[in-house]
Amino acid sequence: MSDIEYSAHESAIIDTGCLIGKGTKIWHFTHIMTGCKIGRHCNIGQNVVISPDVVLGDNVKVQNNVSIYTGVICEDDVFLGPSMVFTNVSNPRSSVNRRGQYETTLVKKGATIGANSTIICGITLGEYCFIGAGAVVTKDVPPYALVLGNPARQSGWMSEFGHKLQFDQNGIAVCKESKEKYLLISGSVKKIIE
Image (cartoon, rainbow, N blue to C red; front, top):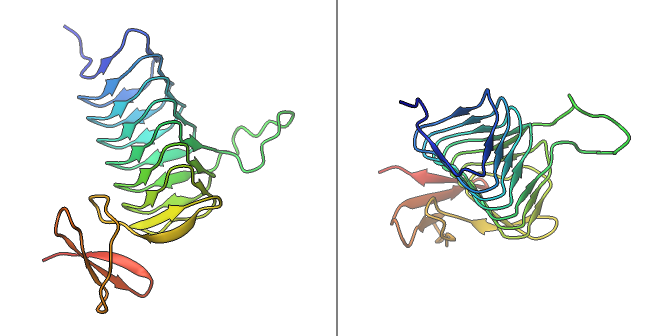
C-alpha cells in the first residue's frame, strides 16, 4: 500500500523531500525539486520545473513549459499559462554567484498569468489580477487589475470569473457570468458581498 495521494507520469522526476498534496496531477517530463510544497488538487503540466522551496497553494494550474524558480509563492487557485516565465534575480550574471539573493515573488489567490508572460522578481500580483498573454510585468499589480503589454500597463479590471468589468457612473460593475457586483472606489476594486 502506497502513502502517495497524488499521481505522476512515469517520466516525471520527483526528488525526495517534497510535499505534494492529495489529488495533484503531475504530467510528462516534469521535475519537482527538493523542498518545494505543492497543495491539493493542483495540475502540473508537461515539461515543468518546480525549484527548491517554491510554494504552490491548492488548485494551482501550471500549464506546459513553465519553470517556477526559488522565491516564487503562489496562493490558491492561481493559473500559470503556457510558457510563462518567472525570474528570481534582478541582475543576473553568469560569472557572479547570486544564490542566496533570490527575490520573493508573490502571486495572490486567483491570479491568472497569460501565456508567454514574463514576471520580473520581487513583486506582488494581487488577488484575481489578470496578466495578458505576452505581458512583461515589472511592478506590483493591484487586485482585480488587467495588465497588458511590454512593459505591462493597466488596461482595466477583471471579475473573479475572468471577465472585463464595465463600471457605471456609480462605480458599480456586474460580472456578466457570475452576476457578482464590484465597486470601484479610490482607484481600487472590491467585490460587493450581498
